[in-house]
Image 1 (cartoon, helix red, strand yellow):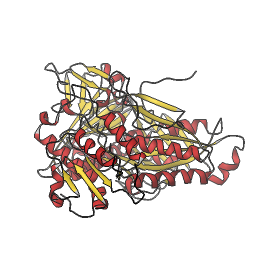
Image 2 (cartoon, rainbow over the protein chains, first blue to last red; image 1 turned 30 degrees about the vertical axis):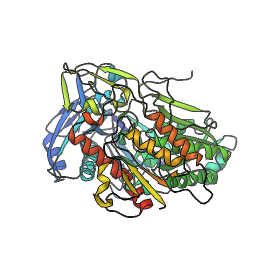
Image 3 (cartoon, chains in turn purple, orange; image 1 turned 135 degrees about the vertical axis):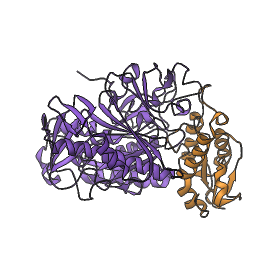
Image 4 (cartoon, rainbow over the protein chains, first blue to last red; image 1 turned 135 degrees about the horizontal axis):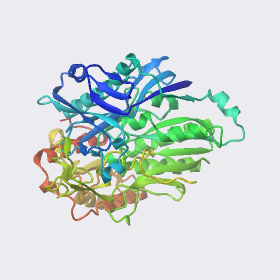
Length: 431
Length: 134
């Protein structure tokens, strides 16, 4: 399966009469046209739109999801299959990408809705979405709309907006600045192509505990999935969509699923020092029986693929740590070496136990940061959304929001700050 | 009785009432629910679900609902449940500035209760075996 990502670089964003990417690479958005599209969903009492650019004194809160504008321009399948696209398999052909732009959805789904993106200042150093030109959408539900419905309406509206931006820009003639090609041969070919390289797969844990903790694969609620295989290219066409609204620092937004750095890194090393043979999707459920079923099945799939190494990433903390460690222990027992990617909740002083579970077999672990670390956010000139519940979002505490508008919170409150797929602005590299 | 649900979330009264299988500890803190579960674990009961479900530290979420399965004929302490309990109690050690349930705005408290019930609805139905949804 071969996929080309045709990336048009976005260097600005503004309202305009026609949605298009200008020659100066400024994305113009026809506000009225987009509003009309989103208002087709009658579940919103009102929709606000705003723009946030890197470096501006702007805070977006509470962030629900972030989505990269993409659309299919050639090949079968549609963007965000099973959600706003048809359910046929995606991941091949050509996909147009507005690189550097993002749709950010905001809504008070619940009273403790969380997620902060600062476009400048010290907190901007921790969120990858301070570097994107953001179209923020703020949704107010109709009176009496149930939380499930509100969450779904916001989720779909964000996807529609991202698809709209990419499609309109492409139709208006935007060309790509660069083309990235991703191709893996069939497994039969893969297994014999690099006989001297270790076969490696990626075990991709999805947050699936329930309401506000959901992920979707081809539109299916992933907590109902038996662990399964997915082609890495399918993730780039939005086959995985986030419905996860909690723990802002380590929730994998749809943007991150579209741009999974683990998949990119394994592609980059494919044929160099590893033979990347595929991606196994698994979930993070609440019952211990469901956990055992998913873990046993995922590791069985890895064994059937004959892999020698498995990269395992998790989403969230606490309960998902149990899945991470269970997957590690089972894989190592099956003779498959593992590398785990997780963040830490090690207390504000960093001295407490980092994960809720541990095992001696977990001897290769990549940390993406301590979510309990304290951070001070300065006052900003403009707030998109609402700050009224900052005191009580995860990572906040009584007195977090000060009179001057500054905020003292744990890193946990910052969207994407300790992303467990490694989609971070901070990190370390071996030279 | 094969399973029991211990909780401090009053929403479980809807559809389940207050029975021997659903024990609602009104006004108790989340940590108190873990302590109630500890007593059962030490008598050989085991957790049906992970006690740290949901992406909220127990110091930030006022409600906790735990389902435990009765000891089998062999009895004895379930070491996995004991380990899960220890992890949960460790996670209860919050910062002094953590917000208390009593300080929360009413909408937030009711949303937390609803979320707690939603996350545990299926597991309670599966192990307690009856009731309804909100």
